[in-house]
Amino acid sequence: MPRTRRVRRAWWALGVLAAAAACSGLLLTGGGDSGPRPLSVEEAQRLALARFRTYRISPSEITVHAPSGDGTAVVRAVVDHRRHRAVGWYEVTGAGRPDGGLLAWDQSGLAVADGASPTAPVESALRAAGHLKATAWTRRAFGAAPLDTALKLALSLGADRPDNAQLLAQSGPLRLRDERVDGRRYDVFSGPRPRPNASASPAGSRGERSPLSYWIDEQGGMRRVRVDLGGGRRITMDLGGVRVRGVVLPGAPWGER
Image 1 (cartoon, rainbow, N blue to C red):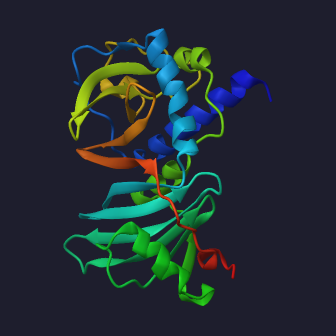
Image 2: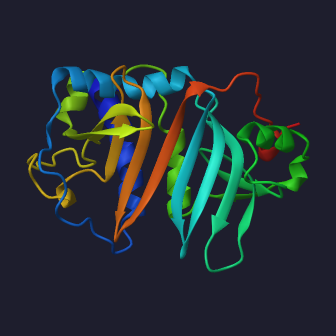
């Protein structure tokens, strides 16, 4: 497959996942920031490095917040981008009965198991999962829920090589603003538009942009990813940015010994 098509397909796939989560009748609203513009050469190079840098520090922590009914699902996990697997804690809050426990997922679906403390350090989730047999896990394929979309997207945030900055810039990402997270400055970029021939102007409405936004530091490190679902709902993923050392993802959630 030509390099041009591979780069576009990789980033469009992220946009398609985000768009799918927002297709239940919710439209992106107008408004937005006053100064979005196309990326500079240097900014495009940093965005092109982001997935590669995430891959290189893997396994690493991620925290996911996603709408779940009238509540919120929170996942704190370790993601191994080399194996395309993740294991951690999940907790669902809302008007119904709270739910939580162990969660594992790969590109084909997710698995849950009982766990004592969803608020414990994420490394303890790996230890707890390592003590369970394969039969302790309940597996299912991904569905259309925002959390399912978030889990699939989380596995797509790492790549084993940098993207082509020139081709990426041609796909329409925008520099939206700068923001500080935990005292550190990040540029916020919108993702490439999921349609190959989309032609939104930089000053256009939010409905003309990708629903994905990326918080990227000066070295190309990815700190946060957000998916705007419309109606005030969003998926937020915060990346730890450092390798979690001395951990092994257990195979039991996938039926392995």
